[in-house]
Amino acid sequence: MNINLTLIGQTITFALFVWFCMKFIWPPIVNALEARRKQIADGLAAADRGKHELELSAKRASETLHDAKIKASEIIAQAEKRAAQLIDEAKEAAKGEGERQIAAAQAEIEQEAYRAREQLREQVAALVVAGAEKVLRREVDAKAHADLLEAIKNEL
Image (cartoon, rainbow, N blue to C red):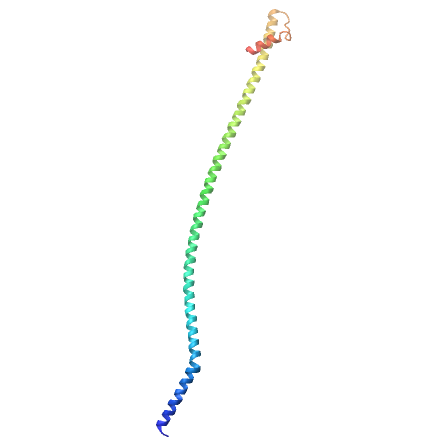
């Protein structure tokens, strides 16, 4: 055998092997590599999106927390304002009730003073009649002189 013929045979066999590999083996390997590259790229893009969404959600959470704190402070301020209003209203109501009770007590005092004056007038009138009876030594009829006694009571 000639080395040249063996070399040509090996070259032809190698060329057929390369052609066979390029035709039947290489495309599935390239497709698998391309699919894997695409899958890795998609995974990295999803990781970047996830990282970005995580940053956005953290920012939204801090904004929401800040808004909640502001609303809470507003609610507390409103509650304190309402409490102050209720206290003022209660003070006003108590003051009005006290003034009403004072007015009622003063009216009651005036009524008692009027009753006491009337009783005193009647007692003075009775004493005047008794004194006049003793002075005149005769009986004075209180019913007959009721107008006179009423005028005396009014003068007192």
